[in-house]
Image (cartoon, rainbow, N blue to C red; front, side, top):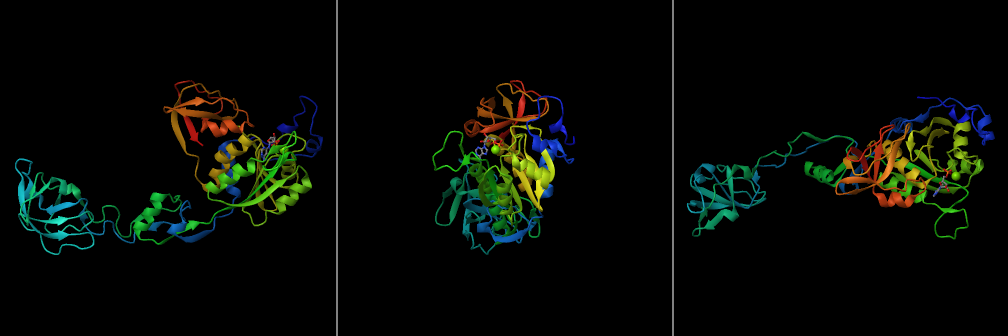
Length: 418
Ligand code: AMP
Ligand code: MG
C-alpha cells in the first residue's frame, strides 16, 4: 500500500492548509482499496459478544453457534397428500376406464395413526402428514378416487411411492443443519423451530455511536438560512445501521471545532465503534481528519473509490472511529460498500446484469455509479454528483466499475441493489 505523503507534495498551487500541512505526517496507509478498507475496519472491531434469544426475538440476528436437529423430520414416514395409502403393486393397471377397486379398512389422520396392517387389495384413507400404515408403500390422491359402496374405492390412477415422505427425509436427529454466522432470515428461523430449538445463540448487536459534523448542518424542522443544509446523514446512516442489526447511540451533531468534536467523541463511551460524517476531506476546517491524524491512530486515509474517496479510519483512546465523508451520497455509499460489510461480515450482495448504456471507468478508483434497472438491463442514471441525494434515492442500484475497466453497452456488470 502506498504510504501517506501525497497530501504534502510540494508541486502545484500554494498550500491552502497550512496548519495541517506543517505538522509531520506519520506514516499510514493512504488510497487503500475498498476491500482493504473493509478488512482494516473489521480488524479494529471488538470480538462480538453473544446472547441467547427466544426465536420470536431473533429475526434479523446472526446465528452464533451451530444448530443440530433435536428430532428427525418427518418424524415418521407419512403421506404428502390427502387420499388413500395402499400397496403400489395392487394398483398398477389403474386408469380412468379400468379403475382398480380396493377395500377400505380404516383411516390414518395426522396425529392419529392407523394401527393395523394394510394387506393385499386393501387401503386406508389417509391425510397430509399422517403416518403411512405398515404394509402400504404408496399414495393415491383423493382427486383420483371414486367411492364404491361404504367400504370400497375405485382408483383412476396407480398409487405412487413418490407421494410418500420418508422419515428423516428433511433432516435426521443429531445432524448439524445450521452453522454459526448465518443471518436469521424468516425461513431459517422457521427451520430452527422445526429442528426443535425454542431459543438460539445469536451475536449481540454492535453498539455504534453516530455523529454528524459541520457548522452548516442543522436538523430538519427548523428554518434554514442561506448556506445551511439539513442533516440527512444522521437519518440515512441511522436507518442503515438499524437495518444492519446495530444498536445506535445517537450523538447528534457537532460544529467544526476541534474542541466540540473531542467533546462529542468523549460522549461515545460504551460504543464499540464511532461513525462520523463530514470533516475528513482536504478542507481547512476538516477537523475530524486533523484530530485523528494528529492525536489519534490512523489505519488509513482515503479509499480508491468514487463517490466516497476521503473516508478515514482511526482510533481515539481505544475507540475505533470511522470518518465518513460529509457529502450525503458519499457517506451512504461508503457505508454500504465498506462499513456495513465490516460490521456484519456479509459482503454487499451483487447481481450480474447486462449494461444498456456505457459506464465510464476511473483510472485509479473503483466507481459506484448510480443506475436504474429496466427489463433486467442496467442504465446509467446520470446525476452522479456526490451531493445529489435525489438520484441515489431514485436510481435504485449502483453499478460497480473496477479501476481502469470501462463498461460498454452490452457488457455484463456487477450491480448492487439499494
Ligand atoms: P465535508 O465532508 O464536511 O467537507 O462536507 C461535504 C459536503 O457534505 C458539504 O456540502 C456539506 O454541507 C455536506 N454535508 C456534511 N454533513 C452533512 C450532513 N450531515 N447532512 C447533509 N449534508 C452534509
Ligand atoms: Mg464539513
